[in-house]
Amino acid sequence: MKPASLFNNSHRAAGFTLLEISLVIGLIIGLSVMIGFGYNSVSQYKRGKDAGLSLQAVYAAQRAYMADHPTANIAAVSATQLLGYLPQGWSAMPTFIGLNDEVLTLNIAVMPPTLLNGKAPYDPSTSTNDGLWDVGE
Image (tube, rainbow, N blue to C red; front, side):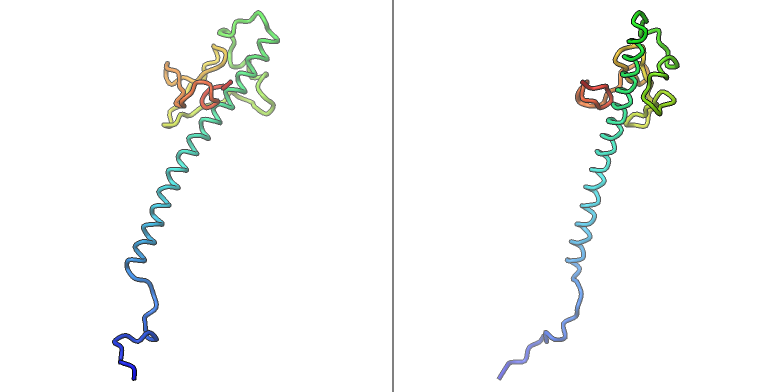
């Protein structure tokens, strides 16, 4: 004869324990935080890469202008003179926003062009020729 058990397996309540629910919620929160950090890094990289591509376009416009006007001084060339040499579809000089949402100035008086934050050069990347916030190599 079988002894009577205190718990009958056929009447066990279905559901999750508090510990299981807490672990799942903790996992979801942890993954959300990691995705947030990853998104921030990717958006900063994208902003730097876009700035680098725009600077490369301005640099190409400077080189094309200097090829047509070999005796010109690049420091005396204005933005309006370079507009015709920008890539097709560009109707104005590009504008730049830094990583902390500061407005950056495009310095076209030098070749290759650089970005300025006030009067200081702006390049928050680890290299000065990586194509992020500069024209690259």
